[in-house]
Every structure is written in C-alpha cells, then in structure tokens.
Length: 106
Image (cartoon, rainbow, N blue to C red; front, side):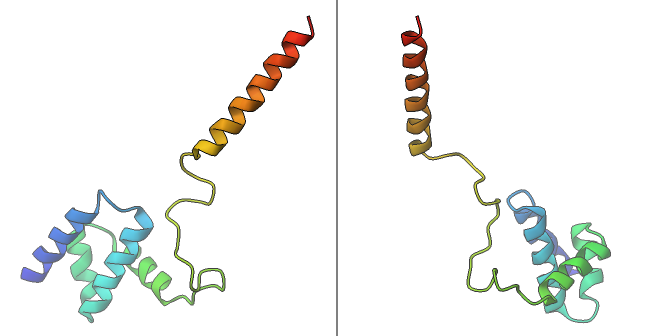
C-alpha cells in the first residue's frame, strides 16, 4: 500500500507536466523497477491501463534507431514552436518590398 501511494504521488506530480509518451515511459520504468506485479501495482496507483504500461515497456525494450542514438529526443517536431526574431525580420522586409512594388504600380 505504501508503494502504491508513493507511485500515485509521483504520477500526480508529473501528469500535468509531461506529454503522454513521456508518462508512458515513466510508468513503464516504475513497473519494471518493481519486478513481478509491478504493472498491476502501477496501473492501480495511476489509473492507467495495463495495456498502456505494457506499450511503454515495449517501447523501452525496443532498440533505438540509428537516428535516435546519441541524439536528445525532441518533445516537439522539428520546426515546431515559436519562430525566432530572424523570421519576423525577413517577413517584414518581404512585406515592405511588396508594398513598395504596389506603390510603384500607380
């Protein structure tokens, strides 16, 4: 019971701060560290299904691809997120050029 409460407390601390994939790997790691009965205990403590935990275990056991080895995994796809200021400047220059061309057309 004490282990279950500890796992539940950790899960509650992480569940709003991590994406689904990261949580799935975390619960799988917790279950694996507990050994026999770990999947059931973690499922009961977190409310996640045993299927989800087993999927995480499969992901942990799968060999890393050549692209993943030695590279930090990204939480967001490449190119995602807010663009840097250099992109804004380029867009503004492009808009100014277009306005100048439109002004010359008169």
